[in-house]
Length: 313
Image (cartoon, rainbow, N blue to C red; front, side, top):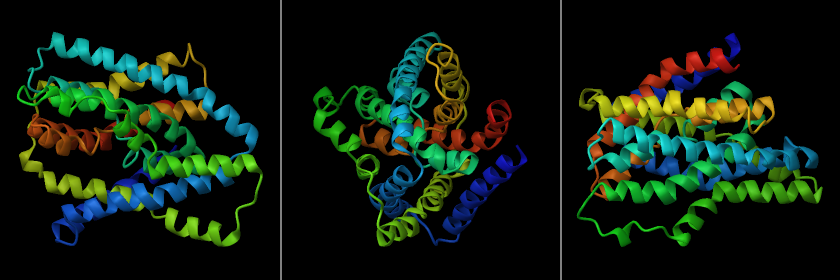
């Protein structure tokens, strides 16, 4: 348990370093964009490839995908609860879609991946990716339409579901690295040493770069600009109480291995998606609400992670 806490402290220390470097003008929004592109298009795919080819046997992989039903169902249930909660608490119609999206969708890559690796090691990455697949599917289909619906002036066709857009997200380099790793694993071929070394060096940057992005976002938002209200509190309730409870409860109906369940619970209880303020701005939704919810969810996670680790590790 102590080792897990110390690993988490390292994660937060890297976020703090990024915050300080942004304050000193070493980093800015453009830096965050570059880091995000580097992670999603290069370092994370190599990390996925390496972990699938080195950490699993064929039998273990075939067992892996049996667990995808649990996160898929849990996200649907959490979304249904968000709809009911928004109605009961009278969330304004101009932010209701944004609220429901943040209540349901987690930050499974930039926060979820490094936290799971810090606690469980690289063995947790494929399980984290299973949750990521379900989370991403929801976010870039239902989530986008909900955010756009907060702006009464936007034409619904601009936010309508598109298989092309979904395919672009699901067939991202990160997931393609995962797929290539699977095919390589099933082929039984050994990874050549030059490719192994290259993937190790470049893929190893994923965690640090992800945490740097979080630190930049916190600084750029500005602590003094945050506004706490009942709707922001509702988002935190969904992220840190409702979502993990749904996953845990479903595990009695859809049993999965212990480590897989622990990773799913952690993934379900991550902060708000990084992209929320950007999407809210782009679709004319409540950007201030999205930004406050994102930053409060990150800051409150520093305390929440202590509780959830005590319960599941």
